[in-house]
Image (cartoon, rainbow, N blue to C red):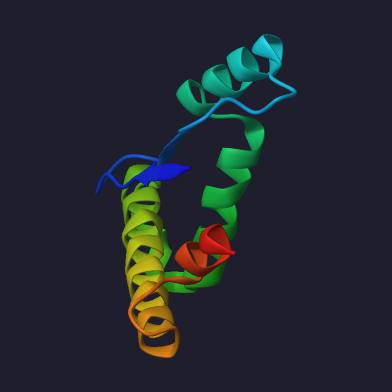
Length: 99
């Protein structure tokens, strides 16, 4: 699966091939969950607000979500760079797909 990274928006995964046990109902539910945030998304924002502590008191939910997305992007980028150093230019995902 390929993940599209948008700076201020949630990430979406686009399937490259349809699994053998394809379930259209599950795909629709996944799409709806990506479009409309669930209670778990709100919990994620609340949890990040709690982790950030007093710093987060002056930030809006949108700012918290933006910060979270930017941190996730940085972490993913750093992990990719580290994996490329360890696996001779390949990420772990690349290594596992080759095997």
